[in-house]
Amino acid sequence: DTDCSFRNTNIRLTLPVVCFVWQIAMIILFGVFIRYDEESDTHWVETKAHDNITSDIENDFYFRYPSFQDVHVMIFVGFGFLMTFLKRYSFGAVGFNFLIASFGLQWALLMQGWFHSLDPQTGKIFIGVESLINADFCVAGCLIAYGAVLGKVSPVQLLVMTLFGVTLFAVEEYIILNLLHARDAGGSMVIHTFGGYYGLAISRVLYRPNLHQSKRMQGSVYHSDTFAMIGTLFLWMFWPSFNSAITDHGDGQHRAVINTYLCLASTVLTTVAISSLSQKTGKLDMVHIQNSTLAGGVALGTAAEFMISPYGALIVGFFCGIISTMGYIFISPFLEKTLKIQDTCGIHNLHAMPGVIGGIVGAITAAAASESVYGKQGLINTFDFTGDFKDRTVLTQGGYQAAGMCVSIVFGVVGGAIVGSILKLPIWGDPADENCFDDEVYWELPDEEEEHQESIPPILEYNNHMIHKQQDL
Image (cartoon, rainbow, N blue to C red; front, side, top):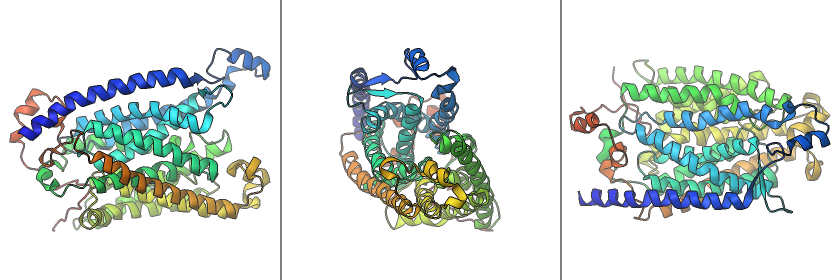
């Protein structure tokens, strides 16, 4: 009781201070650095006249905003509701997702701006709708990492994790996209591989040997699984926008949507097949349907705009459904038992492994590109063989694609280990082992929930993303 009281007092004092101080800092930094770009500034009228632009429809807003809105829904609705499967942690899943996304996107605009769009003459960062999409992408990596520690950390720990996560993301993104000049429109490497291994490394450092004390809270109930499926469907429907949002206008964006659409559909079929085969009764496991059905979207992120061909997209989805579902069945229990990685949402199976697959597919597809398939100008446009990279060959590009994947893994693992060590300090108000996966620690709950909490019957081990249940005939 004393420990719980200390933790509650700590969070009452720390969380509002952190939020207020951070927001004031953001106001100051935005005032110093952030400005509207030419397409969102009132001088757009003059820009149109100078560049002989005849219609406002040429403003990038009209090309990018539909994709931005889809990505925005994925970040705040898709990721949030996907994590509501825990029977007593829905407030934390959606609410803390909301908090760290809003916290992180502001820092992302600054970090990505300093690395990618800082005007050396004025010292200002000029933002437009594409900047907002990239900030959401940056935040996505942190939300993926959140899935590994869901229910086991405090909101202050999440904010610290996001602060460092966005910073690491901006650096590895700059190295992969600018220095190595790898192509990764949908972020298989930059977003998913980094976010997955970042979260897994943090979870390993924060390993709780006595987490079984909150085992009663680790399962799901019927309605919590239904809410989680809402997140799945939003993510599944909008993933073509995610992979195509920042590709070149025209054929690249069009192709990315088609490839992702087909890959996702293929993933659903193989996920259902493997899920059914894995159970002695032939029934489906909702863990697999909620998560593994999305793995194809992750894996096609790098090669989405390449000429992978429609049947190639189906092949990627076919294998991703198998590999991701098998990951939940076999690899997650191994990670927890042998490597001491308590991966609450199974992000290794949905993000880390498919992200690596996406990096490999991207490297092979790039190395195999040919002028007969792409056309000379098509190769230049697709891989941006201009400027300092005009003499790069497709084989060299394939090598740099593979190098980019290695960079994302190193940043995720090493960065996660360091940040995990910081989060392990006993000052963040994290929940006790017996209070993990319970909203009551950090949220005011409806009276009827508090009154009847003790009367909730124990739930059989079901929909535990870390431990695959065994069923008898």
